[in-house]
Structure formats: structure tokens, C-alpha cells
Amino acid sequence: MEGMTAAGKPRIRGGKEVVLRAAIANFTERGYHGTSMRDIARDAEVTVASIYHHYPSKQEILAEIMAKTLSDVIGSTRQALMTAGSSPADQLQAVVRAWIEFHTTRQAEALIGASELRSLESAGRRLVVALRDEQESLFRDIVERGVEMGEFATPYPREAARAVINMGRSVASWYRLGGGTKPEEMSDRYAELALATVRGPAVGTTPA
Image (tube, rainbow, N blue to C red; front, side, top):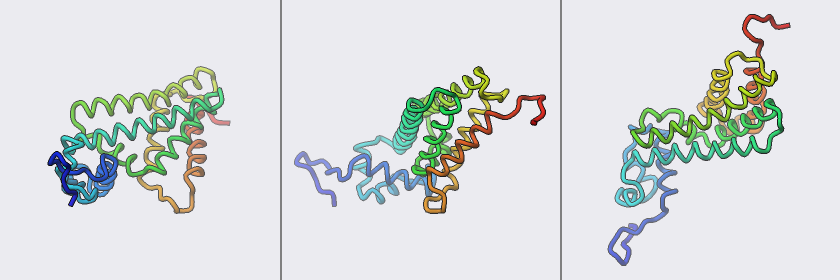
């Protein structure tokens, strides 16, 4: 039992982070629509009423998880860009390493972010879409600058940037820690794959 406060209200044990962790575990295992507030309360070891103290609905929990996940990975990739070299190739490799590291070490949140956009409603969806667009623009700006400077040869910079993003996003669905390849090793591999994507020959040319 959680007990009661002096004011006669349920005493909250664990707080929002405990609720979010339980929600992440359940959304990953059962999906958003397959998870109930009782499932989350059970794994958070709180009452359903306690969850409503923090979140008015399950929808609000999903929106916070997805927005926080995107904000965290945007922060990681922006930090990587700030500390990278001046060339587009160096910058692309740096942000891809940060992108892959995130998707290999925070797989559960990454998987929810990749699969549950369709479950978001109204304001939550608009926020998450805006954050996704912000993340995409970071990659796209690097690729477009590389094309302008002649460092990258892809004739499709927008599509190439999306391909690099989606390549990295898919890692969360199959990567397993302890499976033989460390996150930093996987990050290095995908940094090379990203360069191969943007450095391909232009349309109509024949590779040497």
C-alpha cells in the first residue's frame, strides 16, 4: 500500500520516471493499444490513481516518451555536430555515430518512436512530427552542403539523408547488446555506410 498523505491524498511512490519506465517496457512488449493503465501501474508498483496524478491519460504518457526520446537524440546529434571537423564528411560521420549509438543503447524508446507515431493524437502528434523534421533537417543540411561543395556526389540529397536516418533507425529492431558487436563498433560501420550512400556516382556516370 502506498498510504495517504496528511491531506488525505494518495502518497506517490517513485514519481514520473518510474511510470515512464513501466510504460516504455509495456509499449515495447505489447504496443500502445495493447497496454492498459493497469499494466503500467502494476509494473510501476503504483495505483492507477497515482498515475493520473502525473498524467491525465495514456495518450499523454506516449506523447511524453516520444517527445523526450526525440529531444534526447537531437541533443546528442547536435553535440556530435558541434565537436566534429569542418568537412561535411566528418560531420556526417559524427552525427551518424551519435544516431547509431542512441539506437543501440536506448532501443526500447527508439522502437516506440519508430512504430507508434500513428497512435499519437492532435497536439502530441504535431510536436513529435516537428521534432522529427528538426532531426531530419540536421542530416539533410550536412548532405546538401556536401553536395554543394562537391564532396558528395548523390543527385538526391534529400532522399539520401532520409535513407541514412532510416538505416540507423532500423538498427534498434535487431541489434542486441552482447551479441558480438559493441555499439561503438556498429556506429563506425554505419558511419562508413552513410558515406557510401552520399558518395555514390551521379546519374549517368559509370563507376571507374
